[in-house]
Image (cartoon, rainbow, N blue to C red):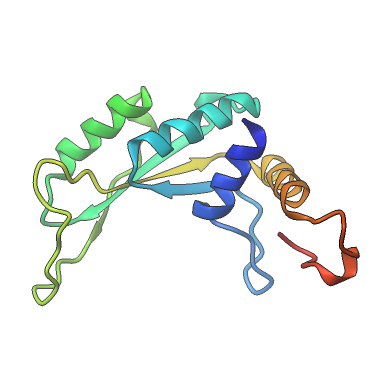
Amino acid sequence: MLIAGAIAYWCEGAKSKPYKPKERVDFINGDPGLVTFFLRFLDAAGVDRRQIRYRLSIHESADHAAAQRFWIEVTGADPAQFYRPTLKRHRPRTVRKNVGDGYHGCLRIDVQQSAGLYRRIEGWVRAAIIDPEKPRESQDARP
């Protein structure tokens, strides 16, 4: 669970960059199954669910109140853990396919005080992707 969750984070989460150092766990995705899996990963990593905050990111033309209710049900979170939604501006020239009742936007999961968890995730990812057969110098220093 820990390795799979770390890899999911490395694919979908915010990573620290040399030009923007940040050791904080922020994960965003629109797939309820992956969001549920990531929350189970956080449980396995020992994160208290009270440390988690959520933010819906959705198009301004969508029903963001219904989408937020959807994500509250998926996560089982207290509505007080949700920040105000981030609304994406509508561009009339864009033909969006993600519309209608099935569109729930993306959910951002922010783990408060998560620098230690971020470093553990980085270590689990490194353990999973470093090839023990190759000299370490020939592989990326950071996952």
